[in-house]
Image 1 (cartoon, rainbow, N blue to C red):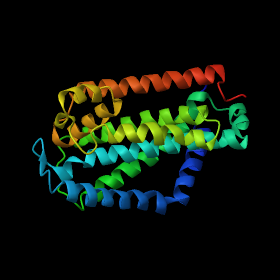
Image 2 (cartoon, rainbow, N blue to C red):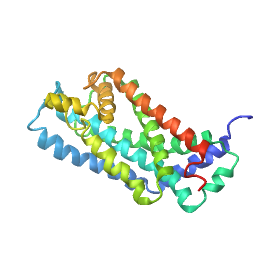
Image 3 (cartoon, rainbow, N blue to C red):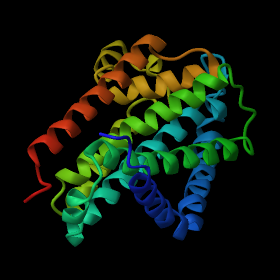
Image 4 (cartoon, one colour):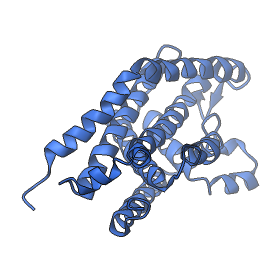
Length: 256
């Protein structure tokens, strides 16, 4: 092996970003409008009843959860759609026979999806400043946590795109699993506000650790220790990588 096929990686990466560029108005305008609506409905309506959570103004408290909600759903959607389309159109065989390794293929597709996810997260972060004063206790950690989350869930989206046999299956996990878990993962509340029994149940929701860890980068506190958050996302990253390695080794739903 003489090195990476940077031309192949760049070609796939540019192609995927070009698709994002063609719909950039709706891709960015939609989350901005949605975020504004969340602030109106939750920040104003509920915020008038709950002024602070753990000493943090409620409007600011929900921002990390809103960013995670958008990044998870969009990251999974972009990555899964990106690899599913070659399967659906039949061009996956050209990709598999091209002089580009599985690692380079994943790097290109996941890299493009993660880039879109990061752009979206930063746009929502900027939008939030129009509504609330937002402290940032650990800015470098915030960017790092965003990047780690984007990569991890884009890898998961890549797995989902290979697994799916139809456009309907492509939407099942994001709509019926990820989004509900995100809403139940402390996006709009602290799990400390729940009864003790439900707090224990909620700790089995992996999204809790993502939102809590990301919230820690803003306010220096979360529902669970930052170490547990990093361990949770690191474990999910490892599982996603191992699954992708197995897929390329066996050809699962790639060659049939």
